[in-house]
Image (cartoon, rainbow, N blue to C red; front, top):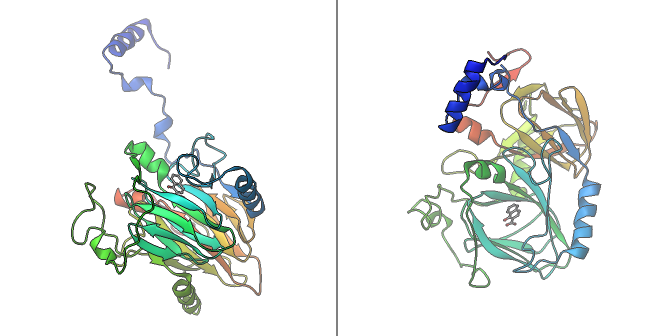
Length: 347
Ligand code: 1HN
Protein backbone atom coordinates (compact mmCIF):
# COMPACT_ATOMS: atom_id res chain seq x y z
CA UNK A 1 0.00 0.00 0.00
CA UNK A 2 1.20 3.44 -0.91
CA UNK A 3 1.35 5.25 2.43
CA UNK A 4 0.67 8.98 2.41
CA UNK A 5 2.40 11.38 4.72
CA UNK A 6 -0.86 11.76 6.63
CA UNK A 7 -1.19 8.04 7.25
CA UNK A 8 2.46 7.84 8.16
CA UNK A 9 1.88 10.48 10.82
CA UNK A 10 -1.15 8.63 12.13
CA UNK A 11 0.85 5.38 12.27
CA UNK A 12 3.58 7.14 14.26
CA UNK A 13 1.05 8.56 16.69
CA UNK A 14 -0.59 5.15 17.21
CA UNK A 15 2.77 3.43 17.65
CA UNK A 16 3.53 5.73 20.56
CA UNK A 17 0.29 4.63 22.20
CA UNK A 18 1.00 0.87 21.74
CA UNK A 19 -1.83 0.44 19.28
CA UNK A 20 -1.79 -0.16 15.53
CA UNK A 21 -4.19 0.15 12.63
CA UNK A 22 -5.19 -3.08 10.95
CA UNK A 23 -4.36 -1.37 7.62
CA UNK A 24 -0.69 -1.92 8.45
CA UNK A 25 -0.96 -5.68 8.26
CA UNK A 26 -0.44 -7.28 4.91
CA UNK A 27 -3.07 -9.70 3.83
CA UNK A 28 -1.14 -12.83 4.84
CA UNK A 29 -3.90 -13.92 7.20
CA UNK A 30 -6.59 -13.66 4.58
CA UNK A 31 -5.83 -16.65 2.37
CA UNK A 32 -8.71 -19.07 1.94
CA UNK A 33 -6.68 -22.19 2.77
CA UNK A 34 -4.72 -22.89 5.94
CA UNK A 35 -0.99 -22.35 5.48
CA UNK A 36 1.71 -23.95 7.60
CA UNK A 37 5.47 -23.70 8.01
CA UNK A 38 5.54 -27.43 8.70
CA UNK A 39 7.08 -29.37 5.80
CA UNK A 40 6.46 -32.99 4.89
CA UNK A 41 9.53 -35.03 5.77
CA UNK A 42 10.70 -38.59 6.34
CA UNK A 43 13.35 -39.58 8.88
CA UNK A 44 15.12 -42.88 8.17
CA UNK A 45 15.42 -45.40 10.98
CA UNK A 46 19.04 -46.12 10.10
CA UNK A 47 20.00 -42.48 10.74
CA UNK A 48 17.87 -42.21 13.88
CA UNK A 49 19.26 -45.43 15.34
CA UNK A 50 22.83 -44.50 14.47
CA UNK A 51 22.28 -41.10 16.12
CA UNK A 52 21.02 -42.83 19.26
CA UNK A 53 24.02 -45.18 19.32
CA UNK A 54 26.45 -42.29 18.87
CA UNK A 55 24.66 -40.39 21.66
CA UNK A 56 24.96 -43.50 23.83
CA UNK A 57 28.73 -43.23 23.61
CA UNK A 58 28.87 -39.55 24.50
CA UNK A 59 25.85 -38.76 26.65
CA UNK A 60 25.36 -40.43 30.00
CA UNK A 61 22.07 -40.21 31.82
CA UNK A 62 22.32 -38.82 35.28
CA UNK A 63 20.55 -36.49 37.65
CA UNK A 64 22.05 -33.04 37.26
CA UNK A 65 23.57 -33.58 33.81
CA UNK A 66 21.45 -35.12 31.07
CA UNK A 67 18.23 -36.55 32.44
CA UNK A 68 17.07 -38.18 29.20
CA UNK A 69 19.05 -39.47 26.21
CA UNK A 70 16.52 -38.14 23.73
CA UNK A 71 16.82 -37.19 20.06
CA UNK A 72 14.16 -34.82 18.72
CA UNK A 73 12.84 -34.82 15.18
CA UNK A 74 13.23 -31.28 13.88
CA UNK A 75 10.98 -30.19 11.05
CA UNK A 76 12.97 -28.83 8.07
CA UNK A 77 10.53 -25.92 7.80
CA UNK A 78 11.29 -24.83 11.35
CA UNK A 79 14.23 -23.66 13.46
CA UNK A 80 16.64 -26.11 15.07
CA UNK A 81 15.27 -25.19 18.49
CA UNK A 82 11.75 -25.99 17.36
CA UNK A 83 9.99 -29.31 17.21
CA UNK A 84 8.47 -31.77 14.74
CA UNK A 85 5.40 -29.69 14.03
CA UNK A 86 3.94 -26.45 15.43
CA UNK A 87 1.99 -28.55 17.95
CA UNK A 88 3.87 -31.80 18.53
CA UNK A 89 7.24 -33.29 19.29
CA UNK A 90 8.21 -36.80 18.32
CA UNK A 91 11.51 -37.95 19.77
CA UNK A 92 13.42 -41.18 20.35
CA UNK A 93 14.91 -42.24 23.66
CA UNK A 94 17.56 -44.85 24.39
CA UNK A 95 18.19 -46.16 27.89
CA UNK A 96 21.01 -48.47 28.85
CA UNK A 97 20.76 -51.37 31.31
CA UNK A 98 21.13 -50.09 34.87
CA UNK A 99 20.36 -46.48 33.99
CA UNK A 100 17.68 -44.46 35.74
CA UNK A 101 16.15 -41.45 34.00
CA UNK A 102 15.26 -39.49 37.12
CA UNK A 103 11.73 -38.52 38.03
CA UNK A 104 10.25 -35.19 37.08
CA UNK A 105 6.91 -33.76 36.03
CA UNK A 106 5.77 -31.08 33.64
CA UNK A 107 2.69 -29.51 32.16
CA UNK A 108 3.38 -31.16 28.82
CA UNK A 109 1.53 -34.42 28.23
CA UNK A 110 3.55 -37.36 26.92
CA UNK A 111 3.32 -40.92 25.73
CA UNK A 112 5.87 -43.65 25.04
CA UNK A 113 5.49 -46.09 22.18
CA UNK A 114 7.92 -48.94 22.73
CA UNK A 115 10.16 -50.05 19.85
CA UNK A 116 12.82 -52.44 21.09
CA UNK A 117 14.44 -54.10 24.08
CA UNK A 118 13.14 -55.66 27.26
CA UNK A 119 13.36 -55.06 30.97
CA UNK A 120 12.80 -51.32 31.30
CA UNK A 121 9.85 -49.82 33.05
CA UNK A 122 8.37 -46.43 33.52
CA UNK A 123 6.90 -45.35 36.81
CA UNK A 124 4.06 -42.85 36.43
CA UNK A 125 2.81 -41.49 39.74
CA UNK A 126 3.70 -44.76 41.46
CA UNK A 127 2.33 -47.01 38.74
CA UNK A 128 5.15 -49.28 37.51
CA UNK A 129 4.63 -50.32 33.90
CA UNK A 130 7.00 -52.81 32.30
CA UNK A 131 7.53 -51.92 28.66
CA UNK A 132 7.14 -54.32 25.78
CA UNK A 133 7.40 -53.71 22.01
CA UNK A 134 4.30 -52.03 20.63
CA UNK A 135 2.97 -50.93 24.03
CA UNK A 136 1.65 -47.41 24.43
CA UNK A 137 2.15 -45.85 27.86
CA UNK A 138 0.65 -42.48 28.78
CA UNK A 139 2.19 -39.84 31.00
CA UNK A 140 -0.57 -37.28 31.58
CA UNK A 141 0.36 -33.68 32.21
CA UNK A 142 1.85 -33.02 35.65
CA UNK A 143 2.30 -36.73 36.47
CA UNK A 144 5.63 -37.70 38.06
CA UNK A 145 7.56 -40.06 35.81
CA UNK A 146 10.82 -41.96 36.06
CA UNK A 147 12.26 -44.56 33.69
CA UNK A 148 14.56 -47.35 34.84
CA UNK A 149 16.15 -50.29 33.06
CA UNK A 150 16.52 -53.66 34.77
CA UNK A 151 17.23 -55.64 31.59
CA UNK A 152 20.47 -56.31 29.74
CA UNK A 153 20.10 -54.76 26.29
CA UNK A 154 19.51 -51.15 25.24
CA UNK A 155 15.89 -50.15 25.10
CA UNK A 156 14.46 -47.69 22.57
CA UNK A 157 11.09 -45.99 22.46
CA UNK A 158 9.26 -43.05 20.93
CA UNK A 159 8.38 -40.10 23.14
CA UNK A 160 5.44 -38.09 21.85
CA UNK A 161 4.66 -34.77 23.49
CA UNK A 162 2.59 -31.63 23.02
CA UNK A 163 5.62 -29.40 23.82
CA UNK A 164 5.18 -26.68 21.15
CA UNK A 165 1.48 -26.33 21.84
CA UNK A 166 2.12 -25.88 25.56
CA UNK A 167 4.94 -23.46 24.69
CA UNK A 168 2.56 -21.40 22.57
CA UNK A 169 0.17 -21.15 25.52
CA UNK A 170 3.17 -20.13 27.66
CA UNK A 171 2.17 -22.45 30.50
CA UNK A 172 5.29 -24.61 30.78
CA UNK A 173 6.05 -25.71 34.31
CA UNK A 174 8.72 -28.29 35.10
CA UNK A 175 9.68 -29.81 38.44
CA UNK A 176 12.43 -32.28 39.25
CA UNK A 177 11.55 -34.85 41.92
CA UNK A 178 13.93 -34.10 44.78
CA UNK A 179 13.40 -37.12 47.02
CA UNK A 180 15.56 -39.59 45.06
CA UNK A 181 13.83 -42.53 43.41
CA UNK A 182 10.12 -42.29 42.72
CA UNK A 183 8.39 -44.86 44.95
CA UNK A 184 6.38 -47.63 43.34
CA UNK A 185 2.96 -48.00 44.92
CA UNK A 186 1.62 -51.50 45.31
CA UNK A 187 -1.93 -52.20 44.20
CA UNK A 188 -2.77 -48.61 43.48
CA UNK A 189 -6.10 -47.69 42.06
CA UNK A 190 -5.05 -45.50 39.15
CA UNK A 191 -8.56 -44.08 39.02
CA UNK A 192 -7.96 -42.31 42.29
CA UNK A 193 -5.08 -40.41 40.73
CA UNK A 194 -6.62 -38.79 37.72
CA UNK A 195 -9.56 -36.69 38.65
CA UNK A 196 -12.03 -39.44 39.40
CA UNK A 197 -12.01 -38.71 43.10
CA UNK A 198 -10.46 -35.26 42.99
CA UNK A 199 -7.81 -33.20 41.32
CA UNK A 200 -4.12 -34.05 41.42
CA UNK A 201 -2.21 -31.61 43.58
CA UNK A 202 -2.89 -28.05 42.64
CA UNK A 203 -3.54 -28.85 38.97
CA UNK A 204 -6.95 -29.53 37.59
CA UNK A 205 -5.99 -32.86 36.06
CA UNK A 206 -8.24 -34.56 33.52
CA UNK A 207 -9.83 -37.91 34.15
CA UNK A 208 -7.14 -40.40 33.14
CA UNK A 209 -7.50 -43.81 34.68
CA UNK A 210 -5.85 -45.96 32.04
CA UNK A 211 -2.19 -45.55 31.15
CA UNK A 212 -0.91 -48.78 29.61
CA UNK A 213 -2.23 -50.13 26.29
CA UNK A 214 -0.47 -53.40 25.63
CA UNK A 215 0.45 -54.56 22.13
CA UNK A 216 -0.68 -58.04 23.08
CA UNK A 217 -4.22 -56.58 23.31
CA UNK A 218 -3.93 -54.05 20.47
CA UNK A 219 -2.62 -56.40 17.81
CA UNK A 220 -5.38 -59.04 18.09
CA UNK A 221 -7.96 -56.23 17.83
CA UNK A 222 -6.31 -54.95 14.66
CA UNK A 223 -6.25 -58.43 13.20
CA UNK A 224 -9.93 -58.98 14.00
CA UNK A 225 -10.82 -55.67 12.38
CA UNK A 226 -8.78 -56.60 9.31
CA UNK A 227 -11.56 -59.02 8.37
CA UNK A 228 -13.93 -56.07 7.96
CA UNK A 229 -13.96 -53.29 5.39
CA UNK A 230 -11.70 -50.82 7.13
CA UNK A 231 -11.78 -47.11 6.50
CA UNK A 232 -11.24 -45.90 2.90
CA UNK A 233 -8.77 -43.21 4.05
CA UNK A 234 -6.96 -45.00 6.86
CA UNK A 235 -7.28 -48.72 6.26
CA UNK A 236 -7.89 -50.75 9.41
CA UNK A 237 -7.43 -48.05 12.04
CA UNK A 238 -7.82 -48.12 15.80
CA UNK A 239 -7.74 -45.12 18.06
CA UNK A 240 -6.38 -45.48 21.59
CA UNK A 241 -9.17 -44.01 23.69
CA UNK A 242 -9.60 -42.95 27.26
CA UNK A 243 -12.05 -45.57 28.50
CA UNK A 244 -13.78 -43.16 30.88
CA UNK A 245 -14.40 -40.25 28.52
CA UNK A 246 -14.34 -42.19 25.26
CA UNK A 247 -12.14 -39.33 24.01
CA UNK A 248 -8.55 -39.17 22.80
CA UNK A 249 -5.68 -40.84 24.68
CA UNK A 250 -4.51 -37.46 25.99
CA UNK A 251 -6.43 -34.17 25.98
CA UNK A 252 -4.07 -32.63 23.42
CA UNK A 253 -2.84 -35.70 21.52
CA UNK A 254 -4.56 -38.54 19.75
CA UNK A 255 -2.80 -41.86 19.11
CA UNK A 256 -3.73 -44.38 16.46
CA UNK A 257 -2.49 -47.63 15.10
CA UNK A 258 -3.46 -48.75 11.64
CA UNK A 259 -2.98 -51.84 9.58
CA UNK A 260 -2.67 -51.75 5.82
CA UNK A 261 -3.46 -55.12 4.33
CA UNK A 262 -1.19 -56.48 1.56
CA UNK A 263 -1.38 -54.10 -1.43
CA UNK A 264 -4.01 -51.96 0.31
CA UNK A 265 -4.12 -48.45 -1.14
CA UNK A 266 -6.17 -45.87 0.74
CA UNK A 267 -7.99 -42.90 -0.77
CA UNK A 268 -6.61 -39.38 -0.50
CA UNK A 269 -7.94 -36.82 1.94
CA UNK A 270 -6.71 -33.80 3.84
CA UNK A 271 -7.60 -32.22 7.15
CA UNK A 272 -6.65 -29.39 9.46
CA UNK A 273 -4.91 -31.68 11.97
CA UNK A 274 -1.25 -32.69 11.62
CA UNK A 275 -0.13 -36.32 11.81
CA UNK A 276 3.22 -37.98 12.50
CA UNK A 277 3.55 -41.62 11.46
CA UNK A 278 5.98 -44.31 12.53
CA UNK A 279 6.28 -47.45 10.43
CA UNK A 280 6.10 -50.17 13.07
CA UNK A 281 5.90 -53.11 10.66
CA UNK A 282 6.19 -53.56 6.92
CA UNK A 283 6.91 -51.12 4.11
CA UNK A 284 4.84 -48.74 2.07
CA UNK A 285 4.53 -45.45 0.29
CA UNK A 286 2.62 -42.39 1.41
CA UNK A 287 1.86 -39.75 -1.18
CA UNK A 288 1.90 -36.29 0.42
CA UNK A 289 0.66 -33.59 -1.96
CA UNK A 290 1.64 -35.91 -4.85
CA UNK A 291 5.22 -36.48 -3.59
CA UNK A 292 5.97 -40.13 -2.76
CA UNK A 293 7.53 -40.90 0.63
CA UNK A 294 8.73 -44.50 0.66
CA UNK A 295 8.93 -45.95 4.15
CA UNK A 296 10.42 -49.07 5.66
CA UNK A 297 10.09 -50.45 9.16
CA UNK A 298 11.36 -47.89 11.68
CA UNK A 299 11.01 -44.80 9.47
CA UNK A 300 9.00 -41.81 10.68
CA UNK A 301 7.27 -39.18 8.54
CA UNK A 302 5.08 -36.15 8.99
CA UNK A 303 1.96 -35.12 7.10
CA UNK A 304 1.42 -31.39 7.68
CA UNK A 305 -2.06 -30.00 8.05
CA UNK A 306 -4.14 -29.55 4.91
CA UNK A 307 -1.85 -31.80 2.84
CA UNK A 308 -3.42 -34.42 0.60
CA UNK A 309 -2.23 -37.87 1.61
CA UNK A 310 -2.83 -41.51 0.81
CA UNK A 311 -1.09 -44.68 1.97
CA UNK A 312 -0.04 -47.76 0.04
CA UNK A 313 1.24 -51.05 1.42
CA UNK A 314 3.96 -51.94 -1.12
CA UNK A 315 3.97 -55.61 -0.25
CA UNK A 316 1.40 -57.97 -1.72
CA UNK A 317 2.04 -60.59 0.95
CA UNK A 318 2.86 -58.80 4.23
CA UNK A 319 0.76 -56.48 6.33
CA UNK A 320 2.08 -53.00 7.21
CA UNK A 321 1.40 -51.28 10.52
CA UNK A 322 1.65 -47.54 11.17
CA UNK A 323 1.56 -45.99 14.61
CA UNK A 324 0.64 -42.29 14.56
CA UNK A 325 0.20 -39.22 16.72
CA UNK A 326 -2.16 -36.34 15.96
CA UNK A 327 -3.02 -32.87 17.27
CA UNK A 328 -6.63 -33.54 16.24
CA UNK A 329 -8.05 -33.22 19.80
CA UNK A 330 -6.92 -29.57 19.87
CA UNK A 331 -8.55 -28.79 16.54
CA UNK A 332 -11.74 -30.61 17.55
CA UNK A 333 -11.91 -28.87 20.93
CA UNK A 334 -12.16 -25.48 19.26
CA UNK A 335 -14.34 -26.41 16.30
CA UNK A 336 -11.41 -26.06 13.87
CA UNK A 337 -11.31 -29.57 12.50
CA UNK A 338 -12.11 -29.66 8.81
CA UNK A 339 -11.65 -32.49 6.39
CA UNK A 340 -11.81 -32.69 2.64
CA UNK A 341 -11.98 -35.63 0.28
CA UNK A 342 -11.86 -35.57 -3.49
CA UNK A 343 -15.53 -36.44 -3.77
CA UNK A 344 -16.54 -34.14 -0.92
CA UNK A 345 -14.71 -30.81 -1.00
CA UNK A 346 -15.20 -28.70 2.09
CA UNK A 347 -16.64 -25.25 1.70
C1 1HN B 1 10.57 -35.77 28.67
O1 1HN B 1 10.27 -35.41 29.93
C2 1HN B 1 10.84 -37.11 28.36
O2 1HN B 1 10.35 -37.89 30.51
C3 1HN B 1 11.15 -37.45 27.05
O3 1HN B 1 11.17 -39.29 29.13
C4 1HN B 1 11.22 -36.51 26.06
C5 1HN B 1 11.05 -34.20 25.35
C6 1HN B 1 10.81 -32.88 25.64
C7 1HN B 1 10.48 -32.48 26.92
C8 1HN B 1 10.40 -33.42 27.93
C9 1HN B 1 10.78 -38.17 29.41
C10 1HN B 1 10.97 -35.15 26.35
C11 1HN B 1 10.65 -34.77 27.66
